Image (cartoon, rainbow, N blue to C red):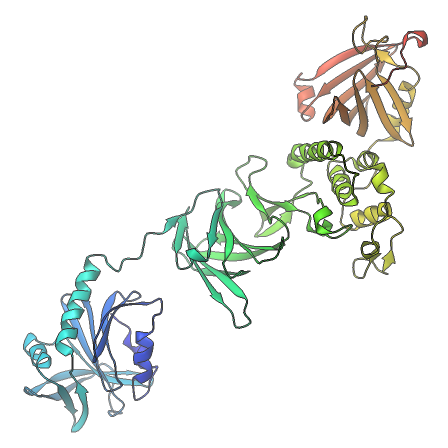
Length: 560
């Protein structure tokens, strides 16, 4: 039944404020009909049809269905009324005098009389009259205007018929694609979405300071509701993604573009725990924001972006090329998992893409591009080798604005003398691995291999007569070359009498990462190579070559 106590409490003795509130075009009411006496509306919250008086001297008519009607007479003139107590009353209309009983109604400051399911004869008298008064315990209240009552009672019945026909049923929620982003704008305000047990209603507003906000009211499996709020633009733009964000349980990610040439995207996640929903701030992201992807194909989706600290760290935004950054929801909060072993193949592929793009450009390598490449090299355990790919950029100067490191990042503040100094200092502060990745035992073995080349048997490509494999060391940087290719050892560890290494290789205009097991055996050198992780070697998927030490007079000086 319509909760009249809430609305009666809005006015102590007169219902002018109540009437205005009832007629307001809020989200709760659907206006159906109005005349001089009443406004008929459907109350979505209570599922009832209600006729609200247009003036303070009026009464309410409420229908919950075709069989039940209540007339509610609010007044401040009967202070002695007790809630739910029956009172004998006399009703006076133009058509006659009526006797009967009404129930008292008292909620805080709201006082009134209520009659339920009045007789058809009484309703007919109301329809034919202009005014009515009510007398209870010698006190008369009213007169109440009955102008338009006949039409209003009829429209209440029509309202119930519309309800029964489903006219007021909420629109079916729009389905959210699972594991795929849904792009929203202000045109979607007021819409409800659903997917994987989630229900989300999107709204937006202009704030008093001329900014704009977007709201997403979310719940899971009809549990408790939580509101996610983000700043947005006048036109509104963002995404909603439903995907397994923590374990295999579907979570929801809400993002919004806040404006600017490239900045920023704000994001917040909703994670369900039983019937409750926790709101988890993810952060603000420059550039393209973040994506939701299952990078390691384990069924849990990661939040993928770039390391925001690199933007404007060494150069302007347009020249910045930050490394990848990967977050995963753990214990209800986003955790940086970029360095986890399962993402190493992805990071290695990203390094190769950067290297190919850099080498394929006719422009000089900028400090922003170099910083991203070296940082990505650090993420795959190859900091020194990555620096070796950009020697000229490391010698570059940087603008004065980027040379100064202020507190609290630097304590005390400092001014960098070069890009190389700025890069190593900031990478170290940001937790990147700057340690050497070639151990001393491996360096010793590579040193022995520099004495003479090694070639394929016979007169084939890569033989001692045609570009054999040759090793060299310069300031602990190890490289080797062969037929139409060359490699920089990125990391190496001794393994018995052998070395397991990862190398950055290039040849015929391409770059790639190769893994090697290098085993010297007397005058022979066995080189096994594979593309994936160490399991490829253990499963016999490696390609093994047996090279022979070349005599000094049988080698060519030609380099790749």
